[in-house]
Image (cartoon, rainbow, N blue to C red; front, side):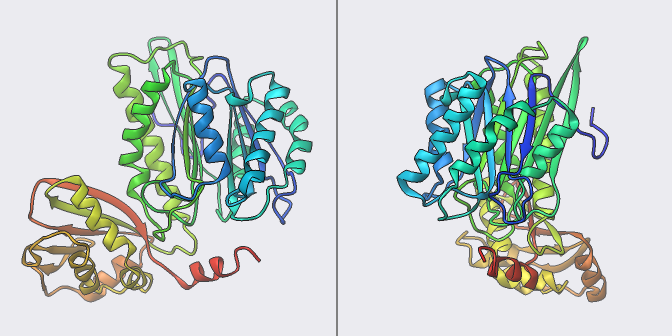
Length: 401
């Protein structure tokens, strides 16, 4: 069952809180907490960037030390705590220790996340001073979850969440996801933080297997600007409080619910991209394998010439063909077909007569399909990307000032 649009579902065993700690110049909420029940399992995936923030290092180590058992999540926005040296690592550990003391759990069971400006020392005292109120305020309500989604935003224009549920006998299993992300979005995760909560009972190994598969199908098939952040995290937590055990056919049910939640979050992230006017769904068809299809999709999605043409709703298929040819796949350009919307604009590597006004109109919509057929095999890839506008430049030209 799909939850109604905008409806938030709170999985059993989770409580949420948020507050303003003064990390954002705007004074908006920038610190958020999630607590879950004893024995909760967790799995995470992180950025592929070799430069990683302190919370990535601490979170990875904690998941290893606890063998995938977590009791809390602490997130700050407004400061990435990256490229901050030993002091940044120590600050991150102090925050986890502070949360651990207040919740009476091990600091290793507290998972940290940060997002914001790189290279600025984390004002740890501001965070520590707000922890008692944050712990006291936690609640297992829709409003508390909605506030959590607001608190983790940076350049996002709106909060992002998605929920699904399904019944198992007399019990209901809920999967809820919250995300932030609007820039530095690129496959192998992006500047995005994604938190997924479910009340099914599962092991960390089971969660990791599901998470890897889901990320490859969703978050690793989106791109806004081709940059990969230092803080990217996707965390999946399972409280077990539905009393439904993950086994047999339930693996497929949970996998479907998780994929639908992540597909929704991925689309919300791309649609809210910095300065984005047009969402483009790239379909690469008849590739030899998935890896080849992804390589071609990324080449087109990251071409500045292609992206700026989309910004002007210009059906310049030649730029798309050139990007395909430059990606390193040893294909035959005389077998490449390109469609904009429903129109064939390039057949067998040569321009095909088409209605340019209609193609312009299609690209001018908030969402448009661009289809590439390679005639090399049977694999297909769907990839979400965007145009690149002057507004993107304005947002990122003065982000830290």
